Length: 584
Image (cartoon, rainbow, N blue to C red; front, side, top):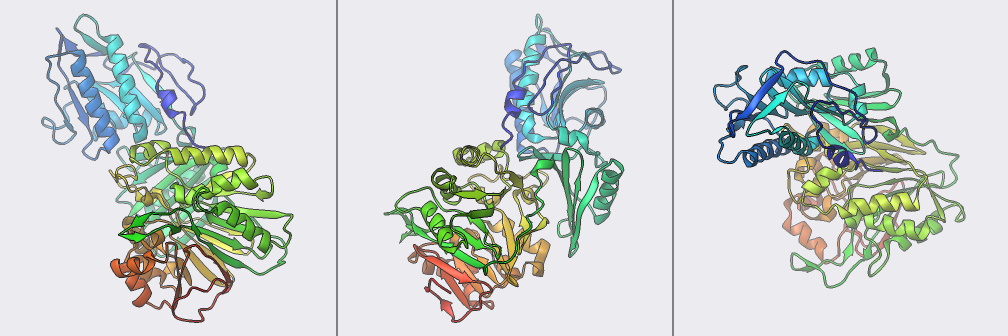
């Protein structure tokens, strides 16, 4: 399910004088040497002393900076007592000097970097010689650390009697993504930032863009043989989808921040919706809360129940599930999910889950699915899994435990081996029976010139999906555990288009909500997913919660606690303030 072989592909040892190419995590056969550039060789060190410098881009990402530092330190280790200047492409020396011997790491503003990017493509990781520059380049920043490691392996092999000479035949070229190689270059000048978005999806980030930037790229995709399968406008933002033989492209422009994002991925990642059968029942929304532990306190208050787990019964009798609480603990989310399905399914012997949505990989959101699959996979049919998890590299770099992501992947493959896993992207809109789904935010929107979800340490909640379900003439907004940046960004991009009748309160009601997102949604009903003891603390301590409850048009709010609360859709508020009733 996850792209995990990039690291093993980069562990190839450099073989001076040959080119290695690969196709994602498959072949890495030798294919000969590339044509020699104008300069046949460049000397990095002589007489045991280095005589070059390391340059990285002024807008380098953390991973590019780390790669540059790693290269510098590795060369100093090879040539003790040397000096090796390092800096960005604007600050070092007097700027670009074609005669200076330099190692260009990542996306620099130099022509030599641009030439290599144009020749080898955005989907490759390359070490090659251009003039007096050794270019260590991949637009995909997660490839940079291991690319730097392989450069140093090459330098170690090339070192000879205190000299280090790099020749035009000493080339390394690995195809990291066949999807990136299949799409046209955006051609916006320079070398764009490319981010590994997980599941073999890669995002090309284009700042300072306009709507015309997206329109021009859409024309390029059409000219390259891609077929437009979706195109929609929301305010001053536009969202398009193109498909080719093996590649899908989700490209969109957001007017609020003047950014174009282009996501290239395998076509199998793309979800097209699921038509429904005849209506045999009425839709329901069920919020499942459990007492999952004991003795746990947060903000000095009992915090042993709640957590995010929702069921939606569709009119054709199938279900949508959102998250799923924890793995079995003091009480079971998995058994509660199955019991409610048995109760609500028109045919208890034929339980079908049309789609299981996951907001993010924290254990209190995916744990219930892991237990559910182990217990009940033989008793239900799961038609699709819908998510957008970041790359494993981002997960590891974020200081968040990668174990839960790996556990989820293993559980899905083991318990539901025939269920396809689809990757959602902002702006997507599709139908599942009588429900319309809109995707408003994924972790891809968090990316800027230098920021990704991995760079904001210890806040993996920034990866949380934001999406809505329109059913029975009402909209239910799911915010997952979304935090301040995603919430404010989503509100700024979409504004009143987010208006909803019911909202799942961000991060259970704890840290992360914002006034701007609640003002845009302006619901009549709010669903908290915490303990009853914490609920009043959350409302009084966080101004955005008190604003939601008292400053807008909210009529009722509910809480998961250890209850199972059922709403018959469409739901009309019957009271005011906190409601503890479980059948509504």
